Image (cartoon, rainbow, N blue to C red; front, side, top):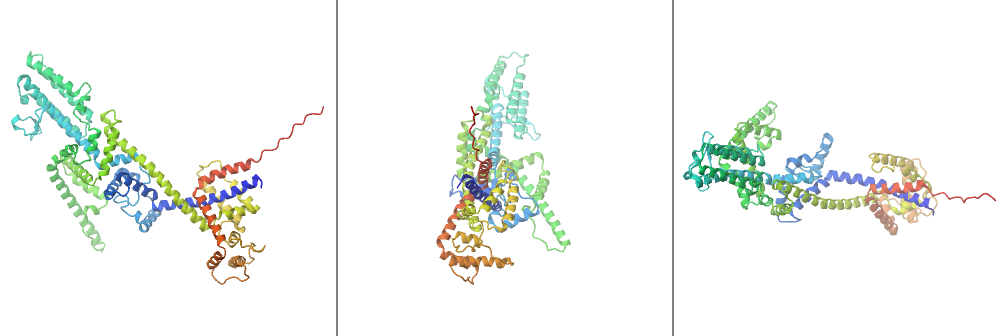
Amino acid sequence: MNLPFVLDVAIGLIFTYLILSLLASELQELLATVLQWRAKHLKDSIEILLAGGVGTKEEQRVKDLVSRLYDDPLLKNVNQEAKGVIPRGFRKITKVIFPGNRKGAFGTDHGTGPSYISPETFATSLLERLGVSKLADKLSEVRVEKFASRIVGTYRLSDQGQVEVPADEEFKDDWEKGSIRVIAEKTFKQNLNQDQNFNLLVEDYDQIVRSFQAKQIALNTAIERLGEELDTYIAACENPQFQDTDLSLFVRRLRSFKNSTFGENNERAITSGSLQPSLSEIAELVNQGSSIHKEAVAAYERISVQAEPIDAKVKETIAADVATYSAESDAKLAESNKPAQAPLTFEDLERSQQQVILSNALGQLTPEERQLYEDYQTYQQIKEGLDKLPDSVKESIGILARRAQTRVRKTENDLNQLREEVAIWFDRSMERASGVYKRNAKGVALLIGLSIAATTNSDTFHIFNRLSSDDSLRRLITDRASQLDLSAPNNPRLDVQLEQLKNQTDAVLRDIAFPISWSPINLNRQLGCQTSATADEPARSSDEATQLKQQWDNLYKSCLSTNQAAAVPIPFQVMQIALVKPLGFLRMMCGWALSGIAIAMGAPFWFDLLGKLVNVRNSGSKPKSTPDQSPPT
């Protein structure tokens, strides 16, 4: 047994495994696509991540939260459903057959889900669904308003929209006198309610606060403008025409107050006033019993009295439009002599129709009413989401916030740092989930490999014996394997080349008993039933069915040592042979097991190995060196 012979046998065996592995890969990919293994595994992994483990008490609440996450527009954009008549029709068939593909499996309206979600998308969707960013923004709005009140005091708007600073006795228990008014009283016992410059300052502060609450300006811009308006007021108070000692002292105290409150670059205003919530406060926003959450929600609750009538007005307009649309639909059905349907509701309409009706209802509101309505709806969504929020998620957010706190250098990036920490948490969890999926996929690949080996009767022992004993078969398969473009493993046309090569090989091997099939000749050799030199020869007959019947009869006679074929169907003949040849069938099953394991290793593995062996074979052995012949002396 020389090296070229061993290489030819190995190449033939590996080439056989490669063909079978490609078949297994196609079958596994088909099952993964139809059953949505990747998408379902991703959804289950997210549920386990948020629940903090498997089999927790809050499993149902976690599933509801994940379902709401899949309804998020960001995740909906990631989900790419099939398009076209044939793919959509095939998807509908799978929804009927497989319950896991039905509507509602991934969110409210979808039966399909994404196979991959980026960590950044998940972090943003989770924090948005929890309302953390909206609550943090509302908390900043409340604190900016309080910050302005601590400087100029509590004020109110008149019916004409002008700012009024009422007398002290008109304030309630929660009134704020304001630092400027306190400084004025301590300096020269003067009430600033009638001071025109101070009233202008209050009006400017109110405009800045409202611009920030309407998200027209950023936090840094709002603080900068508040500081600039205070400088303008101080400059107005510093009138050179008056040489009043008390007024000079008032101005000096105002400058000292401004520097201590805002600092040189307004950095003190954000930190001392806690205008930007810290990470610990952001984590407490999801805890409905915390003081931080109550502070943010208080701003929403103050507008509830005004927003509830607006909400009722919008609902009435929507109901009227839906009733009109339902009547028009009934009229069209009556014209076509079709039975009338039940009255439609807003939820029964298509999404585009819902958007039109909602836009029409909101268009009848003033800008102020629309802002109140949107804030009220936001609060209702946040409250509903937090009521169903599992405790495990609250604990996880708190842990991630404390972890992110150690990495934050600037308070303005607190929320972004928490979002990044959530993304890292998700990414690391998905790495572990990917390992679990690969192990599960490997198990499925092994089952598919064993099934293919048994179905095609791919017995490794028999294949090896045929390749080692049949020179023509060995040479043919080796030559076909050498035709592959093995220099480019990532060639996108590799599957096409392999398919062509497989077809060519099948055409050439049509008259040769290839060692992969449930043919009588293969079984004869596998079971060791051959008793005569003619047992392996194909029966001579013009009828192909008669020829195949003769081959099975020859197998039955050779295995049972009888001269008469059984008058029973072929499957019963095989069972009878198995009872007589148990060791042979045990050897076949061991060969199937080896083939199944080899098939499960995947086509890329065998392709790479085949390329190495073919290169070794084609390079040949190193020629012998001839001894140097020195010229005769």
